Image (cartoon, rainbow, N blue to C red; front, side, top):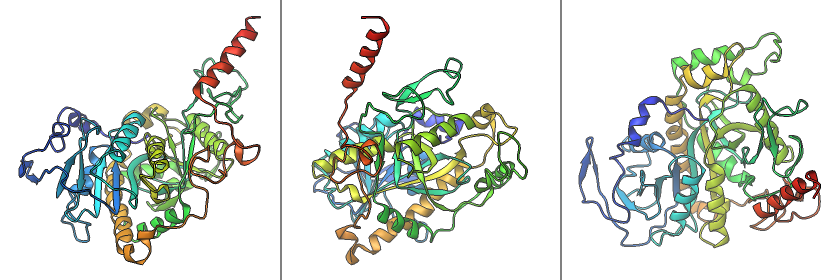
Length: 428
């Protein structure tokens, strides 16, 4: 998962740049750390063309601090609107003066993301029916597919931790991992107890368009990242590592097409990384490629999908962009503990910088094309939506893609199944 840096802990105690009483207007012209904030309540409905979704303060600050940079989209703090239901740490949506682009910060983890996005969709101050959503945050990266500072655009988001779990010290000897899909009895079996948030697929045509915009950016790197990624060069086989297994990790940052795993658990290690690679492959019927790991995306997507079911948003206008701040597993000879706690990987700042550098190009591309088709949307050529097919169409992942149409199974039905198993085991 993404590394935040110990210096960020103080922001949890003092978020003066964004905190105001919920639903209340702050006095105009408040100056905080040299920046003047103009706060206002919505006097008219705002219809942004693009909405940037950040997850925590540094991901948001990189947009604010570049408001006057050459080629910038402009000052997102021109309008600061309190939205009931937003995080107490980040209670405001921020918009350009012309309302064309807005930005919010959800707060970290799935619960914060789901509540904040749902609150946005239900706010009477916004019309989001033609809005493009750019999820723009940092993430951990799989060294098999990319490196520190890389920018990945996903087609699939997979909730990899929505599984049963055994402590690895107590798992059966023939298991490769302690994670077992819900309703299954082995790690390689597809889940039979489906909650509906396991997998989301977004518009691949829009994803490819966003990639073409992002490729205009010159990405940042750091000396520390250059030095650290060199450890991932494997020139000769060294079990359990294959020669060249982490070749992608040794390259310079680039724009990637690969997918994101969602887990509130901040994990580190080759075994867990490979377990969730397998989960991604299993849940997407072999279509998804796990390269990024983050905490919020499936929650954000579920909220947006429910908004689409209520005709509040267009789910075909969602872009998932994650930048790599740290490797999800160590290099040969390094421990998983060192990888997570102690290594100076050097990826945090380039990842934050590249949110803006790549994301700014994406936003500008969407705005520039508004009168030439972007307003009408980008027609999807693939299935979009959840595992249930809630928005229509047939998912190309999940049991319904190969067998009979998927029956919606609730948590309650999964509990029933487990209770029946326990009754049989008890001889009842």
